[in-house]
Image (cartoon, rainbow, N blue to C red; front, side, top):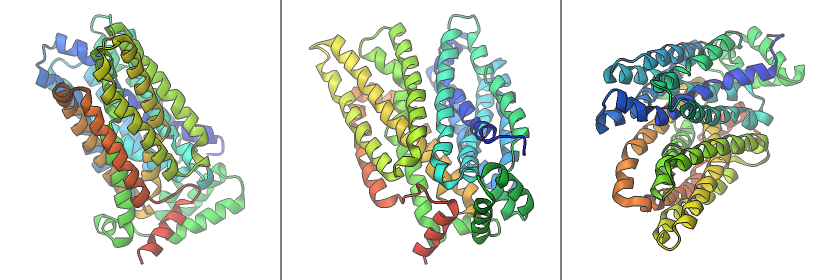
Length: 445
């Protein structure tokens, strides 16, 4: 561990997020060619696209409790193997059933990464910079989505290019596996399993001085207990964390993030842009995602989480209301309205990527007690992926029926999210994981 720097630890600790983003984003370009090669019905197309979300629900539900039992690092290695094998299987699929099954199993790794990475980063990072370091997860997710857009564009005209698009994920999967072989286990998990000496050695490599390490170990030991389960999760003092985790996870989806991220080409085409302009607009949004997320990473520990979430909800609500209202005036000046709609979409993305995008994943890794952290994050991730699946399946149908008025509904959800954050979410910035846990116990006493 002495020869492995902090940057290595946090880069590879967050790399699972890149595969999470790539594998969920790549299908948007690949499905155009898959449906032609395999002659898929509309229903079959929907199943191919959403199969990964079903797998993600399964992965998020199982990998959290398993990580509490076997450790964070071993489960990341397992996820890397699944990413690699199922990316290859998807690329060589000979039929719809084969592809769907491969995508479901691949989804278990995606869901697992969504639950594991926030926990690992939160447990490895010092309290004063936990927000910034945990934001690496969302930066990787957005980078993965951008990479998917670029690969889709690069192989769009290549015969059988969809196989390259899906199989490309093998490269970062191998990188994740090799890098994780050299990653340390979470010190908090080690201490909770009686391996204090190893934990101290790891913390000495990640912290500034011996006093900081000893104080952190002392705090961890005060909150360490036997492995918990659903019984502990139902305790009264844990309830605020559970409400916060599930609520943030669901609201992140029902304020419409994936409608703009995944259906941007459809939105842009519907307002009169050509297909080429729509694709370029999507790549532009992907670049904007990464830039804004990186800026958010730099300032994440300077502002309270709750204030940032509320500011993000206000900005997204206004943008969504604009997306719902502006198309009504398309007949007046369709060209101007088209570009104003693009600007509104970009503003929405900026507010999402700066606030709800990273902060939800940061907070679910912070708020749960050590002995049930994997389980709690797993349940929150399941809630997020279930909401994601529902929105992804219903959005095309609802858009066809209600048109852009649908964005007004998402705007209303953004307003509701302000009330949820104000009254149900507790602040975590600048506090150690142990301080958060102790505060929960005192408030529930």
